Length: 160
Image 1 (tube, rainbow, N blue to C red):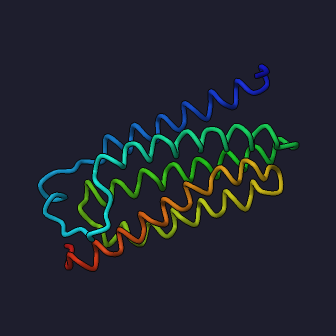
Image 2 (cartoon, helix red, strand yellow; image 1 turned 60 degrees about the vertical axis):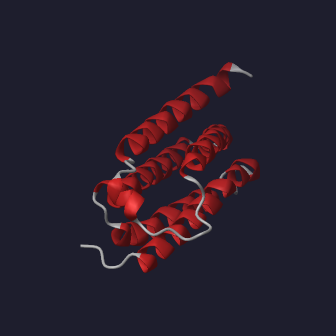
Image 3 (cartoon, rainbow, N blue to C red; image 1 turned 90 degrees about the horizontal axis):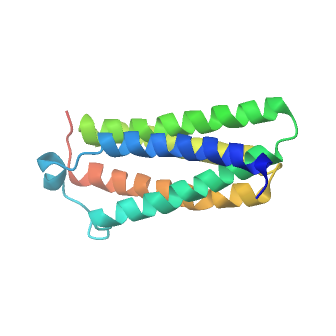
């Protein structure tokens, strides 16, 4: 690995760690969460940490690879902005769902969150197909989480 790769990897790793830590701090599985009716196919709680760890590692790799593939500084700036927006939306979903106890609001937000990943894939793909491909598990996981969020809203109305 060359020095040219170390900076983007370090920046992406620090950013992903901050998003993950903030999201984990906001995510509280308390009595309210335990009382929610979950669909029978919902994964066990312990699996979320494992899946998110793998996804964050893939995001770091995708971000560093995409950053390295950007030929113009302006493209790299847009890339950073898109990842920053996505990180914000990632944390916002946890805030809405777990802290504010509003899965209904989180359901609306997860659509925007998912679209931000689509935007990243679309923006990155012309520069690096490999980097874009490494974001696909993230896209699938957030899509799955969105569907799970929908089912929780349907099984537990109303939220106020």
